[in-house]
Image 1: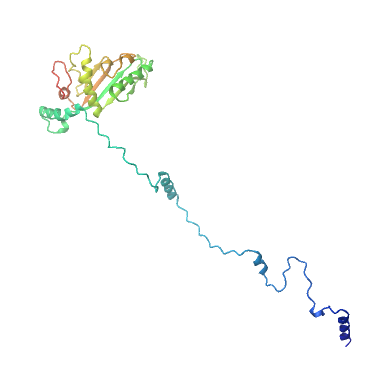
Image 2: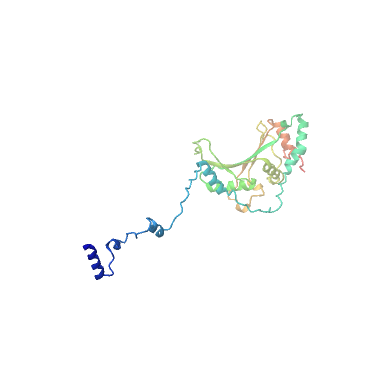
Length: 283
């Protein structure tokens, strides 16, 4: 009874007072404190943006070293790229005409030699194998410019680069050591060989001084013939004004005859003017 009276007195003196059992909880000063009645995690989910789970990426298998090298070579070569279509520049070049002396040998000389010597096998018919032009210069070690000039003249005569020849062994009497340059040489084969021989017979030989024919005794016993030239001026490719020194050369014609008589018949039919014999005309 006394408690009820006290409550009634307090309510009468303070009508806005709230009963003790219904007093609201004091506001929290902690900024991290969550408001009452909210479910846990709702504030965090509203503040942070939601991200979708990413799918696991499988690592690509590494290529072996060989395949990587092939790919790199293909890139360098430009495979897989479209190549521009290029139109042909023009008709293909015409093949060079065959030498006149070679045509003469195949059409006339071969059948005549086969009939003359009774050669049934075509491989036994003698033929010209090569022509070697050699220029020897004794002062080549002391005069290298003279050797260069001789090599240039030999290249102009033959149309082929000359090779410097060197001593195979030392000779004390000539102050010669092994490996020293002693001259230059050119070896001709094929079409150039027949073209040079044709120019030599028809142009150079008639320009020799006091020419009465080539010696028939210059064979070596194996079917090879050597001609000694005293001056390089007989060749039309040499310019008189540019010649520093007159020198000679040796020209060796190597055949497959193996004997002097068959080799002499071969060269005579090719138009070689031997002494005491009428030369054969080459058409």
